[in-house]
Image (cartoon, rainbow, N blue to C red; front, side):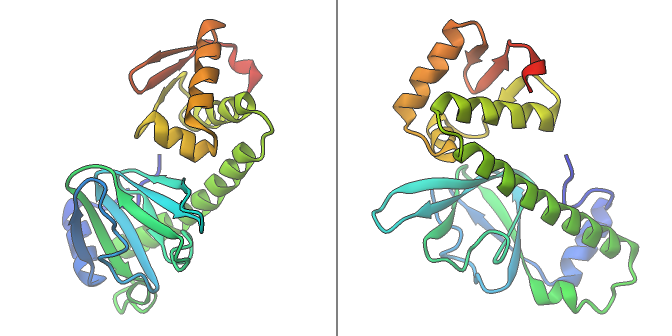
Length: 215
């Protein structure tokens, strides 16, 4: 999977971060990232750890909009962070986040550096991936039944990683939020799929046992 610093050596990564005048923050589990950083026109990178973009509607209902793993990116525009209903919550202790002012990327005076150009290429490709992921999630949540939503999620993960093993980055509760379904109803449907011999579940690992031609 593409990462933001792919093909950039450790020394050049350090030079790049200085060049872009980045800031690094550390967050503990279940703390808000957006309450600490300036959210106007920024690009964020999960340096280490794991976080989730959460939407809380006017009734107080929370839903997981996006799951952010190591070297995943988020931003003011691509992640709807100007919307007050949205926040980013750290889901592991010592989650480290790099923040870059978008203007520092656009107005970089040393944009002839090879590592800078590699960074821009990776960033543009990741923007494209983010758009694709948003469309994939739309395909999930618009399915009519809980089973169809779960199977669509499995299909996307299988195609993304080419593996029958699906590893949940967080909890089953977070998965239910991501799929926009009730956790108890999701648990029942997963049990049905398991009883039918279509999946196996061990901890956070789900093994797909059914014919991948279904995808």
